[in-house]
Structure formats: C-alpha cells, structure tokens
Length: 315
Image 1 (cartoon, rainbow, N blue to C red):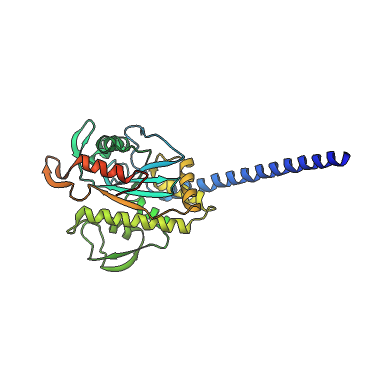
Image 2 (cartoon, rainbow, N blue to C red):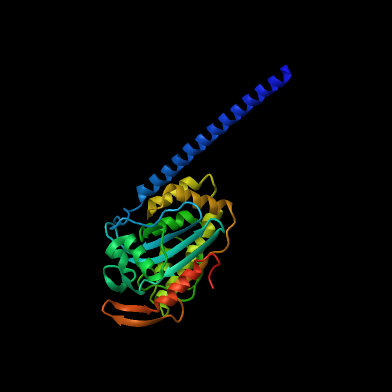
C-alpha cells in the first residue's frame, strides 16, 4: 500500500515537471517567434519605401483564420505618398483543408460598375476608394467576397521577390522586351532577379498586351511560391513573415500569416491553379468615355469565377 502511494506521488511529480517543462518550451518558442518577426519587420522597414497611402475606406472583409481565405493581391503603380491605380489585380484563394492554392487574375481594363462611380475600368476602384472599394466592386460584379488585402508597389516588389526567391526565377523570353520597362531583356532562357523580374512582369508592349503580361505574372508567382516553400524552414518563418510584412501594405494579421506560412511549409499542397477574368470569348474590345476597355459578359465571368473558387475546382 505504501509502495503504491509512493508511485502515485512520483507519477504526479513527473507529470507536473513535464507540464512545467512544456510550458517553458512553449514560452521560449513564443518569445523567439515574436522577436524574429519583429527583427524581420525592422530590417524591411529600414530599407523599404513608405507603404502606399492608407485605405480610404475601412476594409470590411470578414477575417478568417481557419478553413478557406481569399486575399486581394494588388500591385500598385503608385510612387511614395500616392494612391495610384491597381496596375495588377489578383485574388488568391487558400484552402487549409485541401491545401489547395488558386489564383485568379482580373484584367485591369475590365469595364465594370464601381459603387458610387458608375461604369469604369476595374483598376480605377483602388484609386477612388482603396482596397475596400475594390472589394465592394468585385463582390457587386462577380459575387466573390474577400477576407484580406495585400498591396505592394513597384519599389517593394524587387526586394520582396529577392527575399522569397533568392535563387531568382527562370523564364523563357520569346522576343526582346524593352519598351516601357526602363531596361532591355534579351530573348532566351535566363534567370531573373529583382528589378529585371519586375520588368518581365510589367512588359505589355507587344501583340499580346495585357494578356501576355497576366500570364507572366501568374507564372512568376507560381514559381516564387515553390521556391519560397523550399527555402524557408519553420525556424526562419517568423523572420521571413516579418520582413514580408515590412514590404507589403496589408490587413493580414500575424496569426493568419503564421497559419498560412506554417501550413504551406508542413503540408504538401497541390500545384497552383490559375484563371484569367475575363475568360476567353466573353468580352469585346471597346472604346468608351474612360478609354479602351474590355466590355465583358458579366454573368458568364461571374459564373466562371465562382466555379473556379468552388471546392470542386475549376472547369
């Protein structure tokens, strides 16, 4: 009997010590993660330009941390202190349950109704009312709501790419690119970094115009994602996310960032699916009072976008 009581006391002591040790380890990891995140944020802020002007309207997208989340990715043509227009516009969808990543590009010249402003080019919504008006415009025209937004300008993009893809991105350029990008990119297979990669995704002065540019943007983001996952460890994740947040104007909180980052690193995800809006044969080129636009069949594109983001996948 005495031996049994002694064993129970020893067991309770062991459990208490184990829980205490676990608590200490968790506390150390939490402090380390916060420290690394702040270090990354500070290093980016010290060299990066000021973020774009703050949101004109408060962003009203529902925040989620578990399940499926949609993020409005905005490439702004603004320089420091300006609002500018959304030169690049994408919706990224990440499903934590299926580990599936989807990316839909919305053409900037798509002719849509912007709440309070009438028929305009889609990229004007960001200039008129920031990410929130852009969210409202997408929801009204396509029936898709957004949870978060992330804005990066032309100054922050090269730094961000070099951080996430330190080995550069391999591309195959069919014809020389030069007009409108401030550099010359020769034809052929090559590995691009920073500024040159920005020129590659911005170029539009060829026969394919914005359509070719959208394809290149999707290509680069897909390759950046693959390289970022392969080069980032869980130990480096807090600092990497802090640095990323220093280059990006976003309302994604730290908890959501860590959730996405950890899930991508520790769970195998499928290849990223992509879509372009407007889809093929669903628009005409027109010239209206706001300039050259893509006059779309709204219902056809609305259905295509909703089908693409459904759990069954795109058709």
